Length: 396
Ligand SMILES: *Cc1c(COP(=O)(O)O)cnc(C)c1O
Image 1 (cartoon, helix red, strand yellow):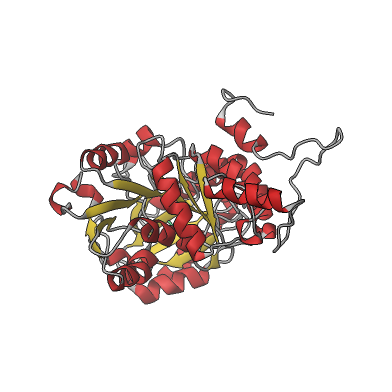
Image 2 (cartoon, rainbow, N blue to C red):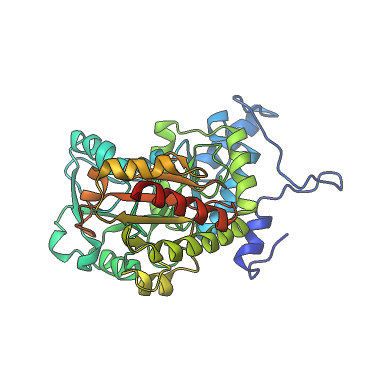
């Protein structure tokens, strides 16, 4: 049992531990697979249904999940400082849940322009079809006073942003949103709840792709929406129920297993990435700019120091005097980095940023190709040697 004043890491390790049954219990919650929930009597069924209607996280059907899901929700609630956590089958479905739960025809949503690409490419057309207008704000311009409309219901931020890690002044955005009675939601996939806590900084809703660092082993897809606001929780729950969003007990178990070691993995990813970022800064002939908020000359460094407790394994860089084909040759020349999307697993990955994705960012107007690295848990000396040989290969 943990106490309320235990530190965050302690609560994250113990949250959702199974209770003793006849004096004994396993360390881990069992994987409870079911479609039907059986009731001892019809009176129990009715009582549990009423409790569920009243907002209690009890299960009356397999879609709601059972003990494994409740334990995972409890751990994420600790991470995010939330009272309500809704699980979704992917990070993107968690993001979409927020939009669908809170927006109606005629409403307007303001989205940060350096947001995760599929929000713009996939979610915006859906919202437009449903009669919701979507526009974008540049986090670098401060609070988006000029972009707010009378029908703006939601501001959606992501800090640090995808590919280039633009850091947003979230407390300032939260004060602005509160003043205009607009809900503020933040994608917290980068910070994973340990490095960054949007709800504590004033956001109303925090979204995560569990797929990334919480899962941590590149073997599951999952998302979560967290809030400490009861009115928003009830709207989110209603949409979650209507959409029938459901997560398998096996995947819930894997996510919880990942969370138990999140702190040590993130710390090592952060240390390795910082070493690699410093090395990349020394490759002045090949690289014009390195993106990583823990670097003192990164534009987001001051806000990152104020609002974050660390950095993760993501580092991007712009290749000097290179085109897309040279960038592709560079990633092809790497031996230890898998080429692929997603990140947050134990292994190193790389991807040439699609031009369309970085062009949308008001944050950066360069036209050089951008390469993203996810620095894994390998020995950073080997990763640096690999990067060095790849630069050498494409430059001869
Ligand atoms: C990966 C990612 C998502 C989507 O998560 P999936 O589980 O891949 O659907 C959402 N937001 C951010 C910032 C991400 O990096």
